[in-house]
Length: 103
Image (tube, rainbow, N blue to C red; front, side):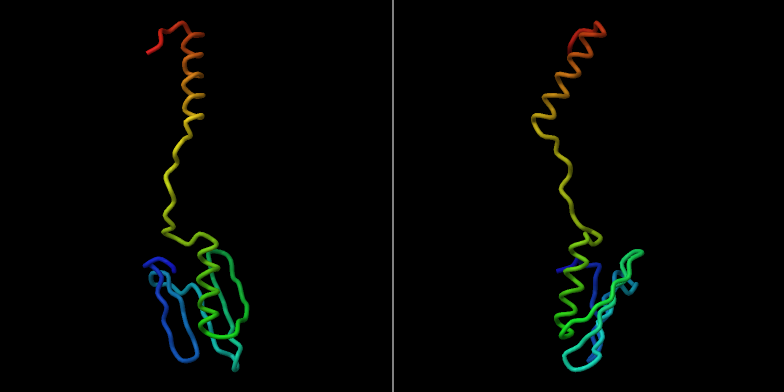
């Protein structure tokens, strides 16, 4: 679910999520049916609990994804046709006011 820069390291009682070579989150088993989650993201530290390691891992991944994890591919800005028409008419008006011929 997360990008290739993220890797989970698993053991019987604990999972650690790494971003490149730094730890981002830990999911630790505390008792049967109870795991403790700790996420360190930027200047934010979040703690919580969940029912199992698998659910805790999924919660961590969803939390990071919801906050736009690194390497999030965004579409490049595409101005709308209306915006381009408005800019062209503004440019024509400025040229007219300045007495320059239009291109």
